[in-house]
Amino acid sequence: MIDKRNDQSRERAPFITASASRTDGDDPFPATRRLSGVHLDVHVRAVGTLMIVEFMNPHVLFEDEAVQELGRHLERLIGNGNVRLMLDLSTVRYASSALVALVASLYRKVNEAGGTLRLFGLNPLLRDAIRICRLDRVVEVYIDESKAIDDARLAGD
Image 1: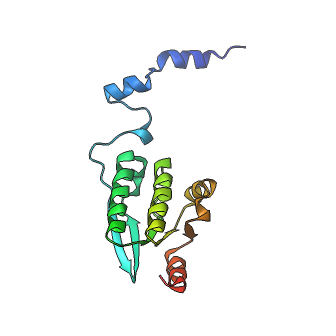
Image 2 (image 1 turned 30 degrees about the horizontal axis):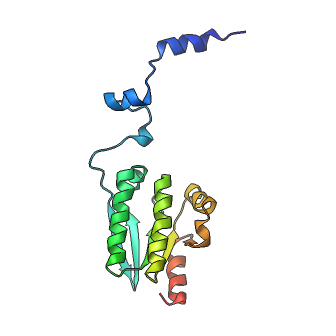
Image 3 (image 1 turned 45 degrees about the horizontal axis):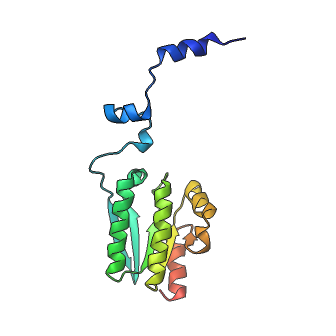
């Protein structure tokens, strides 16, 4: 038996291809929408020799531009000798694969400079993404900031 409701709804619904929607400015996939002038608001504070990086508007971490901007910002920190980094991801609810790739790249750069990278405050989805990529084997992941700082002090950071 054929369900006529589905056929009728398809006939009435506009069909927009991804390429047409990008040229028309109408994107049916808002998570992939490119925003012009995306700026990530990052706050960096020092606790001893540790640099804690906090994200003030983490919703933009779906944007490639924002992740690239974050990468440039963190590379400048490393270039200035700040190689003991802690990323506060407690405000990040969703992240793209580009953010996970950035964490891997950042770990490599910090490690080559003789520093450490710690993550804390990960939500279950982000923690699973880090675990699936096996980054939790090289990057230290903590539940909260106090545990991360305590462990860093014990390690001599």
